[in-house]
Amino acid sequence: MRFILCITGKIGTGKTTVAHFFKNKGFSYINMDEIGHEAFDKKKHEIRDIFGTIDRKEISKIVFTNTEKLRVLESILHPEMKKILSEKLTRNLNYVIEAAIKRRLGIYCDFTITVTAEKKVIFNRLKNRGLSNIEIENILNSQFDVIPEGIVIDNSFSLEFLNKKLNFIYSFLKKSFEI
Image (cartoon, rainbow, N blue to C red; front, top):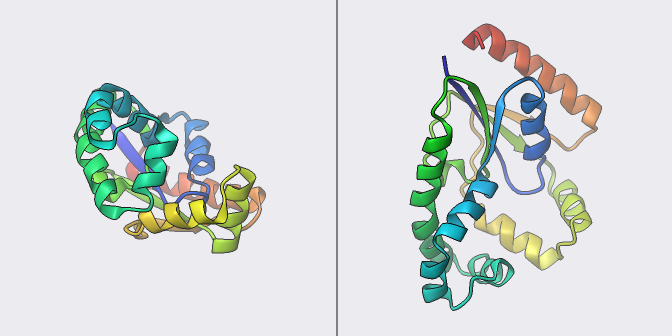
């Protein structure tokens, strides 16, 4: 039986940490950002025609400050991303999919975990990745439709505290979905 667990949440909340917890429990890990890069590479000629560049940093500056341009880019990438994802979901395995914009992509999940964190925690994490306050605000604003669903985890605290929550959720999923 195939089981699809989605991990969603805004940038800097700890989606990757949560997804890797389940990867370490034997789930096959799929990162939609990586699939987005793959789709970008396949559609780079179309992207260059519209944006005048295929430099990801330049395009990020454009789309994270212009919602209409973001929608144009998504209209190019999302169909290809869905195609790539469906090719990866061909076996009867347990999958964990990390996707900030799960809702916009229309990804089907058997269960969803939404990871949240306090804004100051998100800012600290993203500053450690080298992003400026303006870049952080622009990205967070572009993720306006990340609406909590499923189980919501506040990841503003220690890794130890997070792991306790995740072990509890994993036990719940094993019993409830027989995974």
